[in-house]
Image 1 (cartoon, helix red, strand yellow):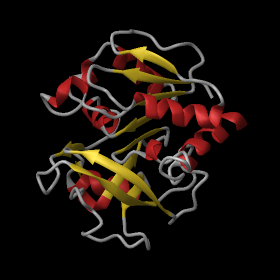
Image 2 (cartoon, rainbow, N blue to C red; image 1 turned 30 degrees about the horizontal axis):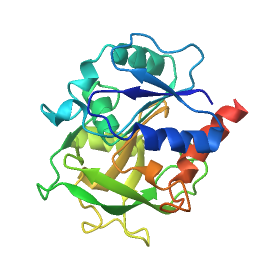
Image 3 (cartoon, helix red, strand yellow; image 1 turned 120 degrees about the vertical axis):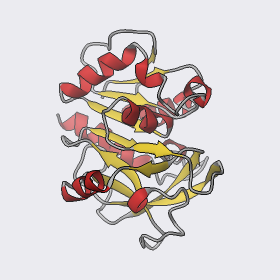
Image 4 (cartoon, rainbow, N blue to C red; image 1 turned 45 degrees about the vertical axis):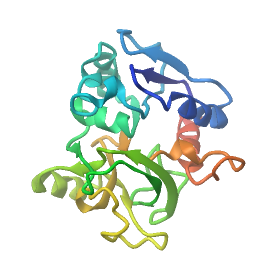
Length: 232
């Protein structure tokens, strides 16, 4: 799998993401700067990592979505390329129009830095094929603007087309208000594009890929990607 990670001013999770990808592929992903205007040839996966691009001084991800490299990312997605956006990267995907909805301030109006549990709604995508449908796994949330919002018509469409990838849940898989710490609509934690090749999610699965650091709950997501492209 040939992957690249886009760096923006203020991003701070690119090294964690690079380690997660290297763990499953045996090769380091390329690091691209936001002012670049083209992606390397033959790229399988583009990753927009977490952090605080441009200091979150405007809407989170709004300035990054206007960076020169994002035109190339949009073209990659339009060709059927795979894109993963985590936390600030998810915010960028919505601001760039690659995924519907928006990420608002957390319902508590507080920055949340804690573990959460996510329930897998689809296990038949390039991002989730190493999970089982209904499986619950742990990841770390670290955001102030992770409250997923969309109008009812959009939410109904996402539900009807099976584009909700992940939901906040209890460890037992129950979707409850208490488990939905940031107040996201319908407890949505991750959203897919209609062709299932763009995924945005708020929690950080790259935190949980090493048993010596914080467990391996998030590892299947990266193994899913590696397996998908190995079989391609």
